Amino acid sequence: MADVTALLAERLQAAFDALAPGADPVLRPSDRADFQANGALALARQLGRPPREIADAVVASAQLGDVCERVEVSGPGFVNLVLSRSFVERSIREMAADPRLGVERTGTPERVVVTYSHPNVAKEMHVGHLRSTVIGDALCRMLEHLGHEVVRENHIGDWGTPFGMLIEHLVDVGEETAVAELSVGDLTGFYQAARESFDRDDDFKERSRRRVVLLQSGDPETLRRWMVLVEHSICYFDEVYAKLGVLLTDGDIKGESYYNPMLPQVVKDLETAGLLVEDGGALCVFPPGYTNREGNPLPLIVQKSDGGFGYAATDLASVRDRVDVVGATRILYVVGAPQAQHLQMVFEVSRMAGWLPAGVGAVHVLFGSVLGTDHRMLRTRAGTSVKLVDLLDEAVSRAAAAMAERGRDAELSREEQQSVATALGIGAVKYADLSTDRVRDYVFDWQRMLSFEGDTGPYLQYAHARIRSIFRRAASETTSAEEAGADLRTGEGSTLVIGTPEERALGISLLGYAAAIAAAVDESSPSKLCAYLYALATTFTAFYERCPVLRAPDEESKQSRLALAETTARVLAEGLGLLGIEAPEQM
Image (cartoon, rainbow, N blue to C red):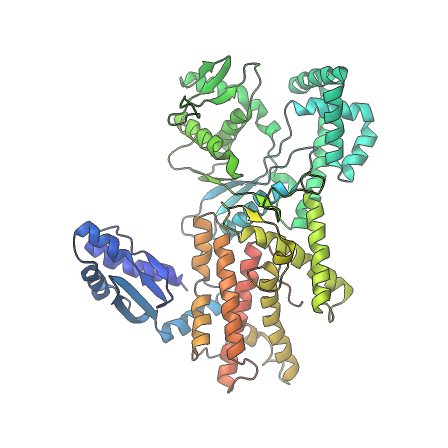
């Protein structure tokens, strides 16, 4: 089954093209009809004709008879579209029979590099890493579901001057002690102790500087100690990713060290291209259009005056690698909003150098910050960043308490209780983040995000579990295994009938699933899918309250409503899965 929104847009586009090729129908869902096309207003200004006249012409020529029961002009030139009952019934039957629930694979698959998470070796993963990690994970899942080839990249901080300090601290405390600290996840303690020695001990500071030279020159023993730090940090990152339920693996890591050998060539090629300018001893590129507060041209510093390389050189090398080696046709950078100007300058310099061809898109998927209830950056009481692993553990603990308080765990075994509490707690944290428009900051509020009411992860998870309970009751109330089995769960063999307004509303909501995924991917915004799933769940609640399922007035209505319920459960489970959130069968 084709995406209903795409089908309507295609039919309307043909009618608009007859008036002005390329005119946008501006199709949207509508409270006054099922959909509304508002493109006649803009087109009227372009053609110098009354908008209602334009809308009348669109209605007259659009081929919508097999889709809509009513297409009419309203207001100053809106085109209202009401889907026909037969089309809705047929489309839902096709959707229910489709393993992909009507979501078609793209006909033009791309190789998309998604770079996200980005923790630093020997530094704790804190709440600041949450947004990049879960947004990037959700985008990868959705892109893959649409048929794109996704290359995950975790650009960790594993190189540079701080490692002289960290390696010297490892030498001082002893490798065995250092490994013990890192193995239990005390990355913060290890880093802080190294920093304290660096700040107060001039001898340690000088040794650290010499160690950086040894590291960069490839000294075998220094490299071995560096690998100790890297490997044990990565093991800890893996534990955090497992708790969070994201798909990153060690094979996705491309740290700063990977790009380090490429940096001299970056400088050489920029110089050959005539783009490098010496400024205060540093080698820079001045992309046009970027200025500082005083209005002076803003440089992208490629090589510092001391000969060292900055982040810009590494980022430029990564662009070349992702295009030339990985073969990316699109690159998504899931990085916080403060890096917006830096990344735009990197993209522009890459284009100037010919490293980012016109056919390759580079997109900064920026996001806001996580705030505490005081609307400031989320911190511990001591004023430090909240460890991500502690936050996740607390989420699971609070979810277990919420379940017990509501009596949700009464029918579950101890193992099931723990499994559901984990799904609820982690799901609550992820949904609170993903459901927020990513460019905005959001307040991390335990009470709100763990609520079973409102736009929350637990609400959607409970909506799915409640639908599954219908089928458990159906199995217990019938003597026919066949009746309560696969046919009920898939809707196969049943007659789907859209009779009541609530059934119709649920059916139309279901048909918006493919469009929701498309919008989320097109705008790199998981919140689009979250909003759709919440609307679907609330529409199902209204249906369930007014349309008895197992106590339907006749067998045909019962089978039809079971098919609607099953399709809704499948969409909720699959949609949550694309967000990286589990949908428990029972809770």
